[in-house]
Image 1: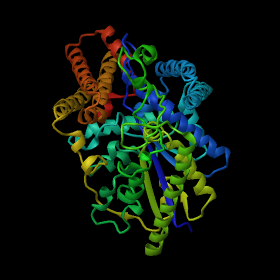
Image 2: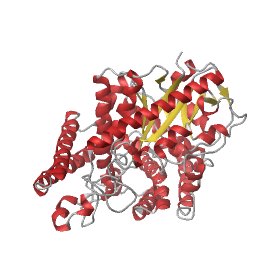
Image 3: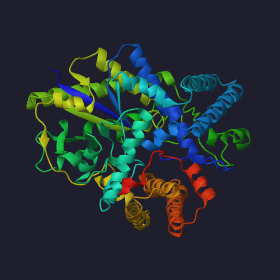
Length: 527
């Protein structure tokens, strides 16, 4: 019997950022481009390398419906083609600029090769990265789960059950359309749990979700096995709690792995460092300096001066840290097994974008970790969530209270003086949507159905937890405020057309073209 099992979870999410009908560039569309370049394709490379080397691995990834929808969108796929070709042009120019600095020239050559290979992988999949991930979904290495439709923070919708149901149902429906199967699990947005959400999950056939450590530890009765075993919270739905130590080793701002001084410095980018007259043509950002993804420096230390990045030194550190992470999990599993007589389920969840985007070496850390787990030890194994009932002999049933994985562990991040103004609008619209679904539940009028479905899309998009989060963090606040206002205003403009029976097809078609997510949406989800 193995002494423990590692449940390694990557939460992949971006808000729906798609603006095809504007002349001025939306810098926010680069969020997806950067994530494809720095996280999603690097993760695909890791999975391919593991498979090529016959490494057994089990990783769980949540792809939010907004992200999945963007990955299969032709407009956004063409956006990425333009983005990566622009970087190839820039890196070729950098080869000439750095000709007389051997180390910079070496780095610029690496970037050029990296960008060229990224474009090759992208085109090999016809621009649809879901095809690449499906290969590992089919062979069982990867389990892909869903999220609420637009990453809405469900605890703040508890008073409106139809809003919760619509978020979960459209999350499940979009997942099936894009990934070809119903999800077994869900990543509750921000790990936001409230008592009773398991009923909505069970109604959609969802069997498990994840919570932060205190969500499990504060349960009633207090779980005997803590976060080292799942708990059942009602109707056969399981909750898995985050292991705090494996989280701290990666997430800690003070001593987490990504802060090692040999790693690439995220905050030094040639988009900000180089002369504007040289770089501005490649920024494509309406005169605003933005990151290009070409970064020549390492973290070095807390001082302003930064030394050049050395990829080989960074890889050596990365391999050592993967070994350290694995050894600590083995020690934990052995200690737990000796005390409790059953294996520990060690849940290690992270934002996927940490690996590659924020922590450039992160994907290589994952590759090193699973190779070492496969070749160098026999105490622990990687698993998917629903394999755990076959590993631990006893699963306790408990009642849990509201929790999240946000700062302070509850809802402070998404409800505070920076963003509280949005909730009267969101809740009023949810109430109106519920009422209209009942009023028009028997309609056969195709125009009314289109209008109601688009109202549902606008409400879901307004409910994204990203907008409140951005308002709290103070970055791109204008964009988050605008998105909230735009979707709520469109919701009520559509409602006015419905109330007045005013058929403005050009207006409706324009909105359907811009906010085209969830083609299978059904306004009756709000009944």
